[in-house]
Image (tube, rainbow, N blue to C red; front, side, top):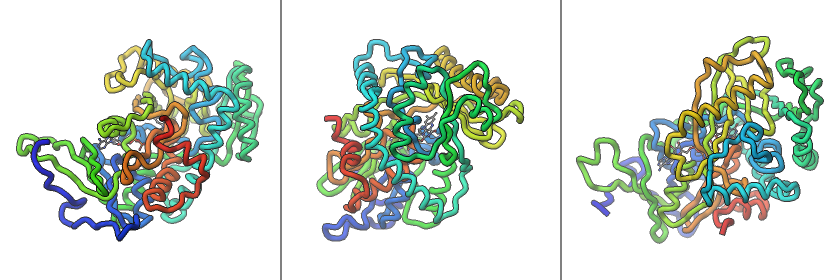
Length: 458
Ligand SMILES: Cc1cc2nc3c(=O)[nH]c(=O)nc-3n(C[C@H](O)[C@H](O)[C@H](O)COP(=O)(O)OP(=O)(O)OC[C@H]3O[C@@H](n4cnc5c(N)ncnc54)[C@H](O)[C@@H]3O)c2cc1C
């Protein structure tokens, strides 16, 4: 290893505090990643009394998958990316996922594992394990909102729409779970959908819709930035922006991270900059995989590319008042001021391809899915030709649930793989990490904790 490790503090001059006795109180914790998962984790760690350093390679927070979020705050059984309707068709245009895995064995295995959750009982079991985290996240978020009175473009109302009769049949297990968990919702006929939301067209015929009046959409990157501001003003959390973690070190009772040389620094010094701490939380989204692999933890999470279009409203009278979700293709359309944010258009590739450019034809195909869904459900609402495209990568696990918990070493924690639901889940996930790291009993059932653990894939 070149050079020594000269930097050993969070802020460059304050000495590190050691843990008090054997207790896990008041630790120095490094959080890798300034997406919603990292920021929410930092918030809860600080609330639990720890001193935190968030290391983010971008110049500000919320620049990864968090930036491209579709707006849906918390997942219902209709939103999760597993179950009877997910990848149910082999046709890209029907299931909303463009499959480009070819003969890649690992990617095929991943799809096969997810497909096992199409079976209604397996779907119900897995959603049942996720449900307590959803509830914990709802509570954690409500607490943050009540404490700080944050405004992040929260809007109530989500209307899921289903096209074909056979897709409506496939939706029934999810409707059963809505009843079982007493999630407030209304099942609507097409005419009732159009009566509730004037912008929804009734021709050609579609199967029906499910309205969630209380579920919300909101602006995830704005929320992340507001939390950062709150932490900045309270103190106790340092954000090291524009810094990339190149490696994690685990030694005895300590954990530390090596930073990649910053631009221009490499020529001046061959010393590796190291930050020492008592614990490290990896919440680096897609970047988590490489960091963990370097220390011997290979998680079978799969990167999935997703797209957004942000389109100006074309005709105000055609614009929706609630968020619309194409339930089977999992394309969300939410209004943000004078624009519509359209998110989805997933592309499934082999993991090795994810850092390479997608190629014009596939990008076009993915964006066309978004444009078509908007045109199909709310014609005349968006000016797609003037829309701004964006793409990002999120991590999906083969069993549909995120990876949250301790890994490899008593002082290493992971919070990643939230798939399509990282927005609101981040608050509950961050609290869970803070509880585990502090040695507090998490208020979640054992089977949920087991289903989230990092070692569950072995
Ligand atoms: C198009 C799209 C639409 C979506 N829609 C929704 C939705 O409607 N509802 C919902 O709940 N979820 C949605 N999601 C998913 C949600 O956005 C993600 O689950 C969530 O943002 C993941 O947050 P994260 O913090 O784990 O990852 P990210 O936001 O990707 O953050 C990870 C951060 O880690 C940093 N990083 C990585 N490696 C390193 C390193 N080595 N050193 C330093 N920093 C590093 C990255 O720069 C990045 O900022 C959507 C995702 C996409 C892409």
